Structure formats: structure tokens, C-alpha cells
Image (cartoon, rainbow, N blue to C red; front, side, top):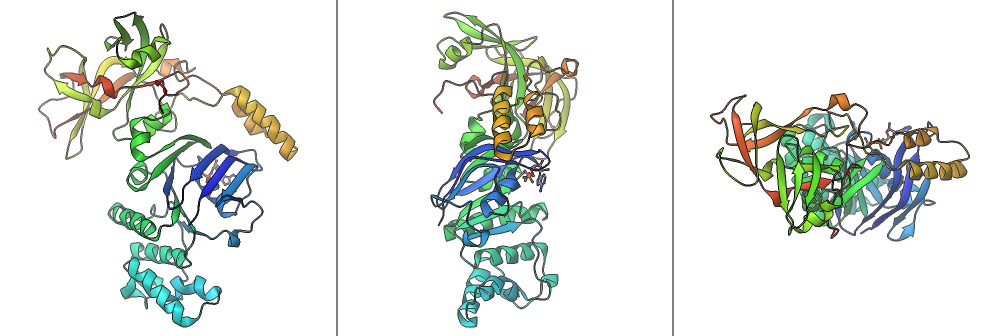
Length: 431
Ligand code: ADP
């Protein structure tokens, strides 16, 4: 049983890379928390600091309420499973699983019993006598898990444990891992870059970007009410449609969201209109997931966007139409399209850089450099890279339309998301 608390934890590598930027996080006893983000965003560094393999540059880490920065890794009662786990090739499965018990001097009798229990729980009880070379990839991963849990750790740290396996096996092991950790009641922190893995496995998901914690919540919360534009764009398939909109308030009547050639209207008595009224005359980002859009007859009145199909993508169970509605797309970097970015404020970073300089006694140049890179998602210097939005719309498989055809889609106005130019959610503040 364990709780984990990170208090303003930062890690700057000696070369000046700011890998983790003031992350505060609480993991509850028995919780399955997934750290999600693209490669290089600092997820592994966080796990390694909790395990005691790296020291934070600033901040504190507590296990069960006790500061542990001065506690050696072996005393932290933590088990780690990595992507590139190494089994001892000359030992049997039973020998591999029981090795940590042997090291801690547990007698052969009770040791065999524990090995049998763990192997049974993992479904590898019938291969205890084999060597790793005689196992499938999935079985080897189960042995690595068995070796980690046999000591009954209080905290399980897993770093992309499934990423070397094929997709069928990954799906199967996902369910096994969550089932096992919940049965054992072990607090688990699980690192992945795969949003599907995060949304299916987690009690709560913590989403990271460039060392900064962007959002944390249950899968439903982070998907349904993403705190930032980045989280909105990262979660979901197809990706959320993100459009630039100018806001015009017609007092007591409606708030118009001008998307270029067309507009959407929020009635004045919609509670969100009051928040949006603050942006009168300004541009914001409107987010629409594919599930907020439904094809309708061309002459349907009301909340409808009309456009032409640019291209279609067939996925077997459904087809996606990408619709040009005369709006401008907002691209979020690191997601493959990248022209813009929303960085933390320069002032805060400069202050942080100065504080680090005091702590480490040297200028963390990279930290200071990054302080100068703040740009707005709406005023990016690569304005010429503005591109027409291709609105992803779900259709039945193989629909009777083709590229170039006109299409009208009804918009579920209650499912819109709004973000300001810094990529922060515009909300009525109940979260
Ligand atoms: P993730 O797990 O999200 O892929 P990491 O925590 O491994 O990210 O890395 C975060 C950042 O720190 C990256 O920019 C990476 O290159 C850098 N980094 C990781 N380990 C080291 C190290 N030992 N020395 C210098 N930089 C490192």
C-alpha cells in the first residue's frame, strides 16, 4: 500500500535540458495512474526520480507522506517494469520469478509457494520449468511482471511495458495488468505515449507536455473537459477539429462564433455565452469532436456547417469525411502537423531560471532560452502556414459520396470546446 506525492518537482539535466518542470501530483493508495505524453516529455524521468534512480533538481517527493529523497532506492519498496526488461536466460521461469526472494534469503519452501501463486495469477503456471528462450513475447513480459510483484511491492512503476509487443497481445495484457494490480491493491504508476492504453487502463490520467503537467483526471474528465488545447488535441481519434473563430457579442441575443465563411451562434441565455463575451472582438479556438457532428439534409436549418468533402478515409467499421467549411485550422505542435505552440509565460520561466541558478550555481541556459519562445496559438509567426480546416466527420462505412461532394453537418452546440490564445480552456469555472 502506498501513496505518492510530488511537490513542485523539477529536473534539469547537466546539459541544461529541462525534463520536468515544477510537477505536483498526488497518487492515491491503490490507484492506477497513467502518465501520458509524447516521447521526451519527461514521463520516465518522473518514474526514475520516484524510484530513487535520479535526484530532482528542485522539489520534494513523498511516499506514504514521508520525504524519501534521502532514502536509498532499495528501501522504497518499489518494483519497476521496463519496456526492455531483461530476464536471466540461463534460469527457468520459476528461477527468474523467485530470484528477488532468493536474494532476500527466503527459504525454498515458502519461496516455491509464492512463485506458484504469482505464476498462477499471471497464467504462466504451466511453463515454470522453461527458460526465457522457450517463451513467447507475451509470456516473457508476464515473467518480468511476476519477478516485480513477487516481493509484494507497495508501489509499482511501469515504463511502457507493452510497447514491444504486437497489438493483439497488448490489448490482452492491458486487461491483465489492470486486473492484477487491482486485485493486489498495489498503487501503480504506468507510463505510456499511447492514448488508447491510457484511457482504457487508468483510474486517472496525467497528461504531460515538455515536462509540464497539462491536466489530470479520470479518463472521462480529461476527454470530456480537456484543460488545454494540447490535451484536447492529444486525446481522441480522429483528433478534435480545432478551428479559429472570431467572437462577436450581440447583447441579449447571441454570441456569434465566426469561423471564416460561416458562423455558429450560442444563445445569450446559454451560460457559456457570458464567459465568451469577455473575448468580444478577439479570436479564440473552437474545438469540435467528430461525435459532435452529424450529417444532415442540405436544407436543414439551425446549427449547421456546410462544406465540400476534400477526401475520405475508410476504416472498415466507419468512414471519415474531411470537410472544407471555409475555416482556418489550428495546429498543435508535436502532434505531427506543428506550426504553433503555447509555452508557459516568459516571466515565470525566467524567475524559475534564476531560482535554479541559485540552487545549482550555474546558468541553466536552456531554461532561459525557452523563456523567450512564448507564442500565441493564434498569432504564430508562420502565418503563411495557415491552412484550411479539414473537419473530420464520421459516416457509415463506404458512403455513397466522393471527394468534391457537398455535405452539411449538424453541430451539437453543447459539445463545443473553447480555448484562449494561450491554449487554456475557456470555461465557466466549475472544474
Ligand atoms: P519520456 O519518458 O517522456 O520519453 P524522458 O523522461 O525519457 O521522456 O526524457 C525527458 C527529457 O530528458 C528528454 O528531452 C530526454 O532527451 C532528456 N533526458 C533523459 N535522460 C537524460 C539523461 N540521462 N541526460 C540528459 N538528458 C536526458
